[in-house]
Length: 116
Image 1 (cartoon, rainbow, N blue to C red):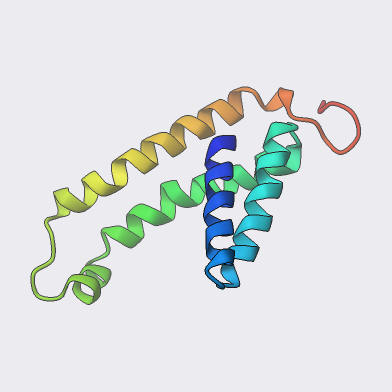
Image 2 (image 1 turned 30 degrees about the vertical axis):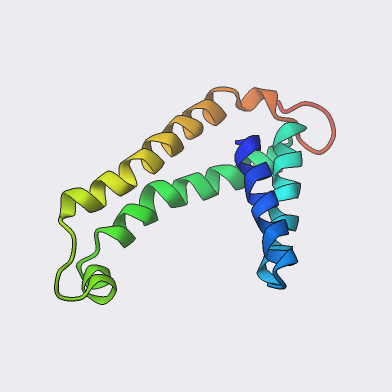
């Protein structure tokens, strides 16, 4: 997960170099998030859990939504299996990360001292 944050940070730096302001926000957010995960801060863990549950719940609903398929793909949308195969790796990886963060939550510290 820290490596994913590093990748998003580098991508944000590329956007800043291209002159897009969203890259500055991306760089700042993911740099601090990666640092928080590396230092095992509880706030970073909770933030990552929220983002991962978003991927597990909202991403499949948004991708397999018939209205989104009609708007994005026009009269010849891809099959539902094709859409599912695009989503499944992200959902499985997110569920695995949620499991790991849940199993080792005692490793993450609060602001002062270890978590209870």
